Length: 269
Length: 176
Picture 1 (spheres, each protein chain N blue to C red):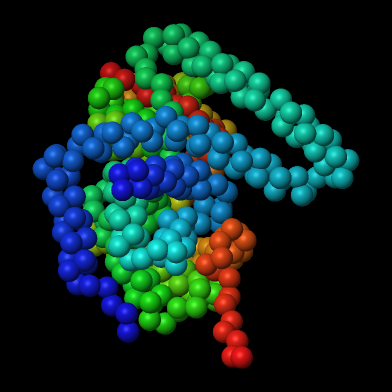
Picture 2: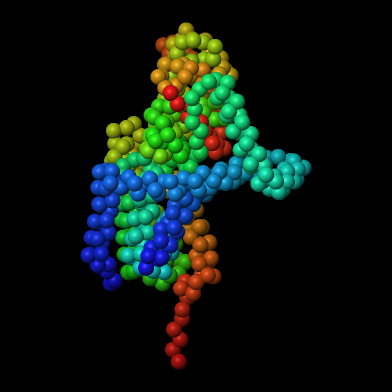
């Protein structure tokens, strides 16, 4: 039987223990920052490519239901897209940046643009969590609870963890992302949205006196210190309203496909 | 010597970027490919325990930096997994065949998932309303699909490695 020497195993265990010790005593911080700064620039680009593949793959899945003629047209279209991909990606990025500038200048928010560099690593541990990691952290002014928007100014989630150079966004569909919300056009808070199974949002404990309709737009109510009033969260798609109950509840569908995001904006105080 | 260390650090960083930013964002099932474990098994077949131990430390360190949770979970999980892989590879699955590699990847993924989920359950979820992962249907379904996709990835990688390297090709001793 071939054995690994215990001395060697002990040495490696010692290295692991030392690394953990150095991390919590902050001695490892400079090395961690170097690693993050090396990985960050490449991760943004690689994530973007992966995101494009994901979108193309999903498109392919939908195509199975279309007629052959449409398939042929789309294949042609894809070929053309591929031919122009490099040029198009630059143009799209430019357009997206312009949209950000237009929206955020109009609203006069302080904002911080950042690239998504990864999806949360351990999301599947808790099935009710969806998260993204961005390349801005406390060194850039990011703090806990800040809202994160897409190019059109639609809310996608909020900051739930912050490190020096990176931060974690819990998406609206995450169980741990709770936002005080109201119906667009109403001034009072009617409830708190909470992600459900990483797919939709729900809002429970809404008083019966509130009149809510399908297709109503749900927005932030401004009750939370860091989150401005009026940011769009989603659209009401289902209402559970029994006359005998004290409360009613609604299901809200986000207006954003979170997986197609490459760049996001953090609204700073 | 230093050149070799530097080369390995670059490789670890590239693999980490590929796993964290590319594979994890692929469509469902493809995002369950565990490049780290696949590569560690191949490296073990080409080198030795010490070599993959350092690789596991490098990979665990990067994942822990990006994980936002308790630092050290990935370091410990990967190290324990490679200890098991190394033991099985050196004592039972020694023939460098596709079958051996397939069994190794299956065992390593099951072992790794159990360790990491147990860690997270003990650290974060024990007081939450989440169900214990072993009684969650989603956990078992995800584990099954993860095994299938990684077996497929292992088969593809095995044949690519076989084409590139002589080390994975079968050797026959002929008595004259």
